[in-house]
Image (cartoon, rainbow, N blue to C red; front, side, top):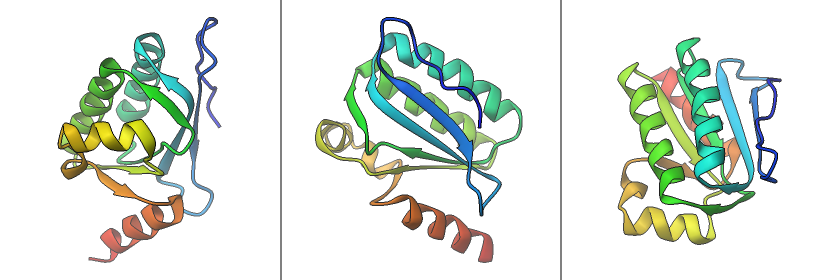
Length: 130
């Protein structure tokens, strides 16, 4: 597991780890708020991961609280970077304010969203089979 990035004044934790079964799938669990400070730390960490060759990224949003517009912007940048390299980004457990935000911005048509992590992993496996 890679280190969790959290700012001193923030209670948000980011956990990055590769799935035990699908070792090429990186799961990012964000617990707390995705505000501007967290987003910048988060963006740096993810940039390293993408540069290291990760092509399958699942972002678990089930414990995510408030997401600022900067938070959304960093998700979009991340998505573009991964997709440009032929990868996939999936969001799981999207609920509450984030779900509304994705609807309003129509980003729910951009991001592949799944109710659970298992659903996302299954979809990634099917993608392999195609």
